[in-house]
Image (cartoon, rainbow, N blue to C red; front, side, top):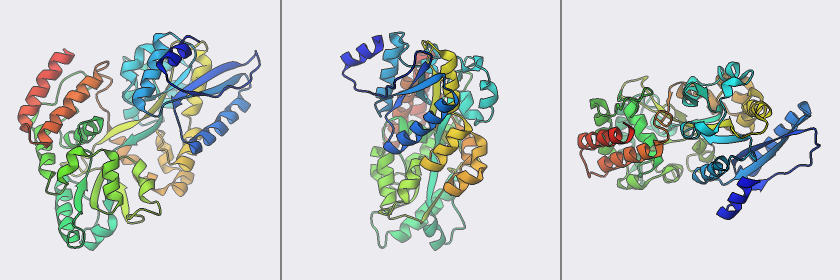
Length: 423
């Protein structure tokens, strides 16, 4: 109980479902952030099905804070105490590198290699640290382009833009036309504030322009190149032209609120905004579509990878049983249920062509190519310094967007900072 005492001292509150179990049963505790009521109900049902099929294992759930930062703090307290209070932990896509020393190599457990072969390769690669699989993909996320299909038709465009040039052209024309009745209308909204969301947006601009991924998987610092500079210059030019001057204060919800109020032709955001955009109080309900973000050239789209994974604590007293639970949670059966009932995006590729999933959530059929082309943030290769790397990067980008620095100067300075930090 060492870790729980540490948590009490820290003043954190967690919900732990405790069941009465027989001495013969192995107890596996699954830790995650606090889910909503609908997700809790579904997972309780699925856990019960697992326990009915595996009467020697009892699954308990420990729910921590919703904030990913606070949840990571919870895990670190458990790990620093060497506690066996948790067995399976739900981890963010940018945590495998930082947490690898505290987590089991899942490749050692039977069936894992075959199972992960069915998931998107980019996510598996992201979760592999030094040849060890730190987490099995659970559900995913990636940047998407939201577009007003009704306005594309109104202004004579056949479909959404495939290139950034096309997006700029469409955004300008639609913005000019809509301003006659709506002075608050803008062509394109995104996330421009100085935070992790800007890292995601800017990585998409740079990668889709042929500018690399900040730090390559082999550790090469690749950010200082002409394509990356051009991508930042392009984005800075949007501000005040097709994007509002206040975009440098926008986070995800700011963009969604502007979009959902009917004040934008295009939006970059995560998949969560799709169902919200189709709620009854949305001004854009039934008037929009989603698809890949543009690229400098057609077919050169890039989407920053998000999502969550299931990992097994190195301090678990029952690692074999914990791995069995982790494989179940990430299985096709569970991911399919979560896709159809919760609109959670699966990491198993075949589910994007599954008839049941597409009947329940038709929009998922258009997302397969997005996740095949998803780009991971350099969190694994730069661990345990990814947070500092990302902060340096988004601050450099922010300086360009706000006109404090020229793009080339900002990237020159960023390269030197990264060299000092990583080498």
